[in-house]
Image (cartoon, rainbow, N blue to C red; front, side, top):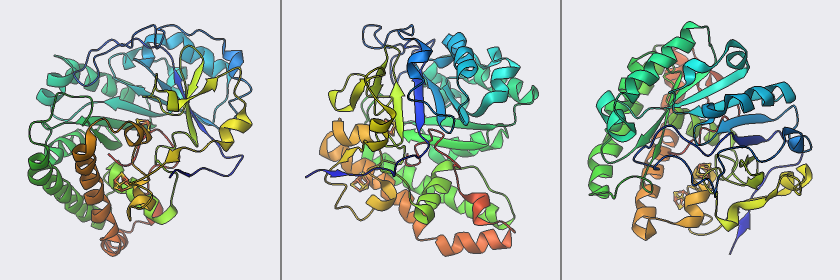
Length: 367
Ligand code: SF4
Ligand code: SF4
């Protein structure tokens, strides 16, 4: 049985704009550029074709491929639209090319980096870690004061405590977020062992560190803790990324999809920009089914990810494994609400100081 979840009308929406299907890296997770026959490397529509869809109150995220390979589109877009917030998800290699005007318009920059140098370079390519950090330092030096999020891809070779602590220690990123890669990376060797001996204890240690810091007035920007807390207090869409209800993606050929990853899956295809109306997008709701709708964690987890919920690429066992990780995170936060409040009070912090994100900036919340 399928249940439908969505938002009331007239809410602001997140539009994820593919600027190109091309990428300048070939990471082990995804293999680089899209096949141009599926996601063209050049934009095949005119920006004026988007005018009926995008409103001033909306959030726009640039995505790809590597979105900075098409800086012209980003500039033209900012000249044409006045979105309330601009976000970019980038591998960071071309961040130094951003001019002041674009930087001033950007609110959040999500930069792919996996943790320590050796791990990042093993998956993303030699020298990537150093270049990315150099570029982040450069834009900070140029006065960028928005939110810079280190977006990690976590595999069996990650050590969640070591890698998150490492990225926090650089004092370059406002927030750290991660996605567990059960699908894209090489086959997992011993997933359950990694979950039980590495991921869960590492997450618990990170949480203890985070609580201690709250007690002395420091909010470490660990997005999954902050985002889960926000969902416990304020609720939010299912899935948490808003795919198919408050977030839609526009591919380079003008197709509208409910999820940026689902570039060729029929279930995600909404229509072409010229055929789809704003009203229709506001009415759409993702279809979420079992096991999520009967799951006691559904209110917070929100089925985690629409793409994996529908595709189930890793079978029953993989589904159990990823749910175990989500539940452990949710338990850590929900069973410690009183501790969080006490620590925040010791550190003279309000809940508003801790909750994240303020708006849907493409951080998916549940890793
Ligand atoms: S924990 Fe698993 S089953 Fe439960 S809502 Fe999340 S994804 Fe669905
Ligand atoms: S979390 Fe899943 S559904 Fe949401 S944008 Fe990412 S891949 Fe798509």
